[in-house]
Image 1 (cartoon, helix red, strand yellow):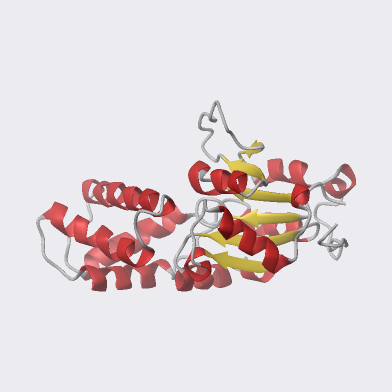
Image 2 (cartoon, helix red, strand yellow):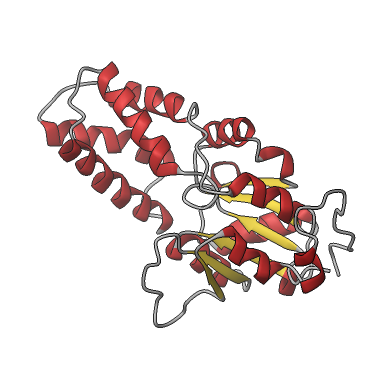
Length: 249
């Protein structure tokens, strides 16, 4: 039986390659509205967007304002005029069309679904995330999908994770692992809810000296060893070995 019976998995930057999808959607949006999409302009957008998402995690801005304001601020930075709401709607539509995955994700999710309950935990936009998860093939391996837009609170708020656990019928928190690439949303959120955490540190960044994650990995293979017991690791690649356990146990 796996060391962890339930994995709460972040989407962007963890399972899905948001940087690749964002790059494509941004260029398509700028082209549609006749605006430049140079490296400098894209960097400006990233800076604006990152700051606004950080504010969202702190409860300083609402999602519906964030997604439009980022384009309002970009237009202002460019000294241009335009309809920021229309730009955002077009951008989100294009983003939903790019279900790019991080290396090895689909194979890993298939393997992990054999030994644990898997659920999505994301602060992303509902219709965008749902479409990308479906198109990527990840959705069929998920036992639940928890999106902050639907729940009404954002990661790292502990209520976000409490809602997910209640919905999944999970009672034993010792067997739950939050997996994500964000120290402020995923790791901090898991800690707020009293859960073990795994930081997906793809780029090998320096780990925090204090209040760090329970585990750190740079690949899905490293996560296998954290989740699976030795006999399960030996069976990686085999099928029809779906986990059998009481979710409350």
